[in-house]
Structures are given as structure tokens and as C-alpha cells.
Length: 380
Image 1: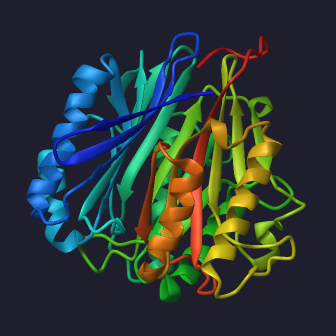
Image 2 (image 1 turned 180 degrees about the vertical axis):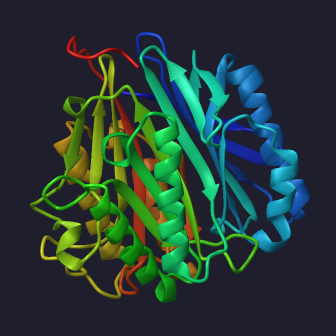
């Protein structure tokens, strides 16, 4: 079980999940949020950057970011500042998904110790230790004619990048994120392209898919209809990967024409990583549970995630971070109160991001890290 830490800075707060039980690599999930929404964007961004710098130097010395995601309230006027001011040598994801605490920016940072971090010639970042290379990509996009073409091109380019890293989509990719500009209109194009490309790569209902979140979000340029973030592992064997279904509570995504896994667990010799896809209030028939009721949808969503975690022999105690997506900003206070009661001190952020099906009022994703000893596999 990881330890939780909260740090209060002058204009920002940081919630940190600390996993320090591993053999050599320590892991930290850091969520930084602004505490004064009256500040200008540059002031808020600087408070986040300063807080991260302090954490890196003073709180978690020796830990370096391997992946960072900025949540922005207005990419058109904010994105350039982030790319000009954040000089981290890691995969960087920047997306318009406004934090709902009345501020303009929040930051999720995934940090590890004893990692050799480098940028590959293919454009993906590598975090290497022992036999494993963890390969991260952030903010991938293009300007193809429509969402379907953009997504197909994103995936095909990613397949080429993985090939350059001696990896395959079907064997090595663990997690993807698709951020869709006007998700109600454009998500169908993402689904069609993903289904088609996955089929060509041997990813089917009879084999497996990839854990994923498909959610509303946009970049500065309105012509970008889909952004993709990715995570793959080189050096992993199929024996180390477990796909999670939660069959008592959830159906297979292929039942309603989409292709992603509900969750994926990766086993190392000293820990287990569990990646839970975007999960909503759904039953095992694929139907929306509690239409129109944000409280009950939140409860069912949490129950669904709990079932997936349990399948990987984990619980909410092992969860390192959570991202909560709301369709209606008016539901923020209700959801925040629920989360503060149940998960106070845990790194999480609530953002405005419509889910791929209009009837879903809320969705969440998370990652868990569990301490274990398994001599079959090499430690992380």
C-alpha cells in the first residue's frame, strides 16, 4: 500500500501517492492544483511549475518525471505558455479539460527513481531500468480531413514508432488515451478507425484489446479533432499481463461496437501495476445505470471500478491517482463532496470533459500500484 502526502504551497496544493516498497525503483503520482482562482493564467501556471520544481528538488530528490499531463481551461490562450515554460525531458500531454475547482490549470506528474530517461529517434520517450523500457507518448495529433482519418493516421504512425523500438501494438502497448474535440459529434470516427486498425494488428475480441480512455478534450487548434497519448512496455511477456473484465458488473466493450479493455494489470517481480480504463455507470448488459442521477451514477461507477480492482487483487487503498470526468459542471460540488469523503488526501482531479455516451454524466480512470513478491518475474 502506498503512502499519501499533502503539501501546501503559497498558491498551490500537491497530493502525492508514494510507492517506496519496490526493490530498486520508487514511484510517485503527484497531483498539483491551484488554490487561488483569481490569479491570472500565467500566475497560476507559474505556481504549478514552482510547486513541481520544489517537489522534485526537496520532497522527492532523485525522482524524475516520466509522464506529465496538464489540464487547461482554455487551450487557445494557454497551450503555448506551457510548451514554452515546461522543459521536462519526458512525455508531455497538454489538453483542454478545465479543472472544476474554479481554476485554470492542474498537473498530473508520474515520477520514478533510478530510471534512465531518453527521447527515442521515433519521437517517443523511454524510461529504462533493468530489462524493461517504458515507452511514453503525449499530445500526438495531425491535421487529416476528419476524426476517422486523424485517428487512423495516429495509430498507424504509432505502429511505425513502436516498430522502430522493436515493439508491436498487440504485444507491448498497455494504455492509450484519446481526447476528442466535440466528443458527441466525433467519437464515432475514433471508434471506426480504432476498430479497423486493431483488426489489422490482430487485436480482436478473441485475442485482446488495449485499456483506454476516450473522452472529450481539445487542443489549441480546432482542426485537431483527436489527440492520442500512449504507454507501452518493451521487455514484457504476455504471461505478465492480465486483462480485467468485471463480468458481474460490466459487459465486453465489443458488445456495443468499441474495442478497448476495461482494465489491464501488469505483474513485475516486486509490484503490480493496474490501469483502469475510463469507467462509467454501466451494467453487464451495456446499459446506462441510473440515467440522470449524478449521485447514483457516481456510486455505480465507483462500484464498477472496485470490481475491476478486486479482479487484480487490489482495492482503492492501492489507487495512486484518479481523474474524474464530468459532463455537467453543475454536478461538481456533489461529486467533490463524495470524493472528499471517500478519498481525502488521494491524488485526484475533477475536470469538465463529456463522456463518449451522452447519458453518462460521470466517468473516472485510475492507476493502482500494489506491493508483492513474485520470483517468476524480474523487478521493475
